[in-house]
Image (tube, rainbow, N blue to C red; front, side):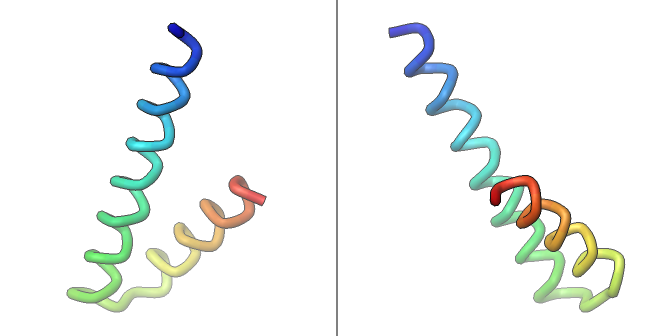
Length: 45
């Protein structure tokens, strides 16, 4: 049960991180943000 809660929290935080990064990308297109998104993508794979 505890592990399930931790997994849910980590996936939620990851989702919010991706959401925040995409918002940043929409409002200020900057290459460093693109690199940041790419690094997240590599971590996920």
